[in-house]
Length: 176
Image 1 (cartoon, helix red, strand yellow):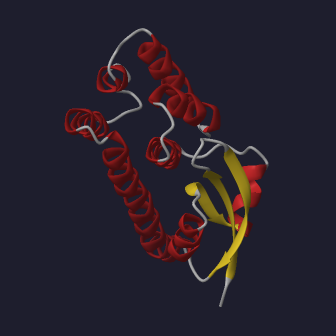
Image 2 (cartoon, one colour; image 1 turned 135 degrees about the vertical axis):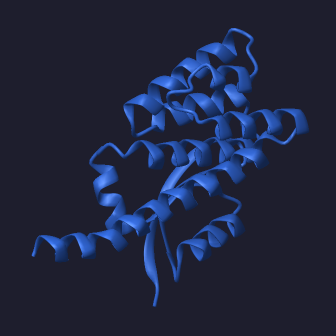
Image 3 (cartoon, one colour; image 1 turned 30 degrees about the vertical axis):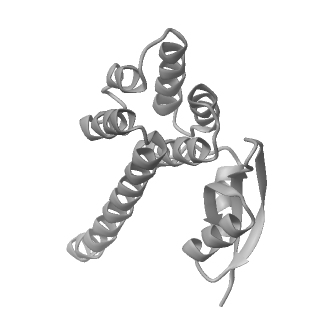
């Protein structure tokens, strides 16, 4: 069974394109986009993107995962760090994440390293986030470390959702 996925992706020259792709699952959709030499920024089933298209704000952990994924994708496509952060700040769907990202961009323009700039905003970026960014800078692979960080944050969001769902039934039964 195929599903329609809405995507935002970056081309090799850094332009952002949007569209839809038919695939059996989200990983299959991402593979299809990569075959088309597109770097996926955001891929979601069409029904899930309707609320995002309306400009609805995301919760902070989800917005942070999307921010990390966007930066990782753009860096992987060869977009300069400042432009990647600027674009991710524009696309952030949570006010705290957007404000922190704009501040990080400003710090980068002032000559700070990315890890230093991120560390100044601990109310948004966790110690793990800061450490992963620093490791990517030291290792010379910021795109890889941001991608792994995005994977971790996405798994964390999914786990929290599963826990909430698992606890919902006993809570409802207790109320009944």
